[in-house]
Length: 133
Image 1 (spheres, rainbow, N blue to C red):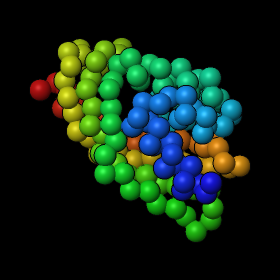
Image 2 (cartoon, rainbow, N blue to C red):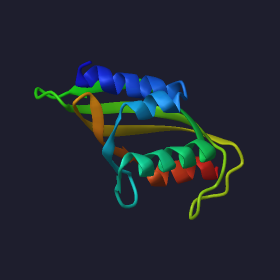
Image 3 (cartoon, rainbow, N blue to C red):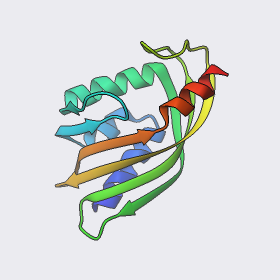
């Protein structure tokens, strides 16, 4: 599988909520760089993050566009997050099933058929505004 195919399969698994398939595409030493906060290193921490996300949000990524570099292994993704805020997280507004549509992007690295880095970007202030209405 090419890097582009690996990332496509990763996002397909995300949208299907097939967490085991999604995590099977992630390297044991993955570096997850979230929009806010410190990087998480390792599949166990990334898995914990995904479990928390699943408890707090129901999200589907639409209009996914993947871009590959001329060098195998680096992929950029642009997408629109369609979500429901299910459970509040510390420091964020209360959750009561608010829905949101938010543009986002990610940069990923793939080595040996596994995703070794996921860096995500979105506008947190816009998200807070959307769930506070």
